[in-house]
Image (cartoon, rainbow, N blue to C red; front, side, top):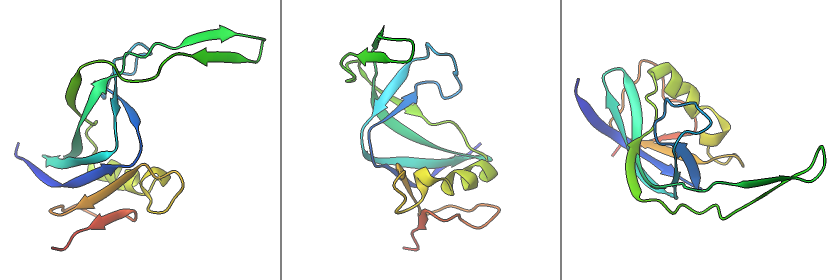
Length: 135
């Protein structure tokens, strides 16, 4: 399988990602990623990007005030070592769906990711919210 860079993703706000994108357990290790540009790759039938962040060792303190009110406190700052890790791998269809979500749609208040694809071929048309660099 050949993996090649096909563009970049710009992360627009601090985000927390699982270190292992396939670990769904509540105690999974998480990484805080700060805004910046990260490479997007295509390998085989999948698309993924590689990020750099710091292990998020934040453990919130939850105090139950009433039956319906909880207070969460603690210092939510990444204090662990820096790590390089991949996003989950998306199929073409999943990636196209991702690009149409509010988190990837240019100008949407929920936008958190901006993709610029420079060498990308998908079986279908590139979705809205993704710039295709023709240079």
